[in-house]
Length: 330
View 1 (cartoon, rainbow, N blue to C red):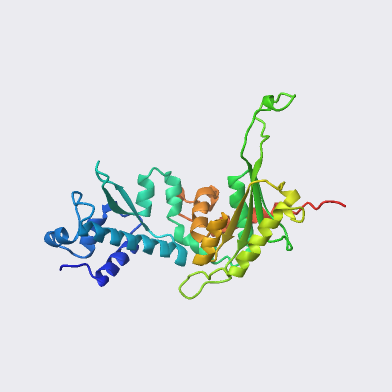
View 2 (cartoon, rainbow, N blue to C red):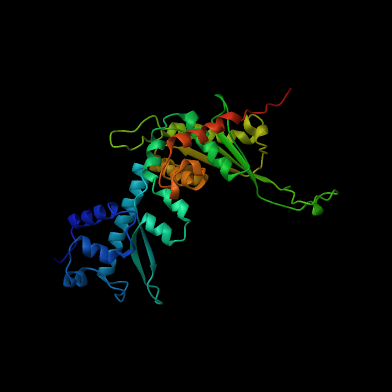
């Protein structure tokens, strides 16, 4: 065996995507050798060790394999809206700038990285949470979910009410400059008074109306994205419905947020990145639910159970105080 063939590459990719979330850390060369059943002689011929020079063909071969695995993981995240069970990363392997690639199960990686046990236990439910998100198919419910998450992240956050909302489904704000009153006001206030400018988050939600046969969400039509961008930008002026209600001023800093259970095409993702639009897709929403949802949603000891009923209750609470715009009185 003098080469690693295309079929061998595919075997390595499939083995990587099939690893358990609890797989312990393993060096990529060892993983490839085990997957392809290489004997010691074949491994030495085809794969590098920590002393192999950086320009050696074996190092370049391993770099190519690592790139394939990273691309496969990205396809799983972006194209299938699935969080893979494995991670791949590199670590320093000496003082000469050398490094090695490692593969590890996601749960094992999070635990070893110092994440709280309760959060790691919640992540075990990632596939069940994905199923919940992909089945929403209801823009109103997705708005309420986004509003519920934003309210855990920011003191002032609301889902908006009704139609004709100019495409703004949630908004939130947070202070970006905290100053004591003694340096600004004639009246002394004992507690810290928040007097600085605010950053405003304005969000739009697009729920996928259904999945195709293999569970991949549909792609968000580019026309929808262009429509949302127009709704976002108009909020800076007096004709924006949420200009007064959210307290957005002409030069207030804005963070635009797209919350969606659709997939985004590469051109749409590039457009969002170029314009500074944050995107919460299905994988991101899985993380946010694990991070911010109340304990009742993961009721079993250790967080190993995911309760759809309790998540629906939490999301439903956002409907009770949906915001309405403040319109200037003539």
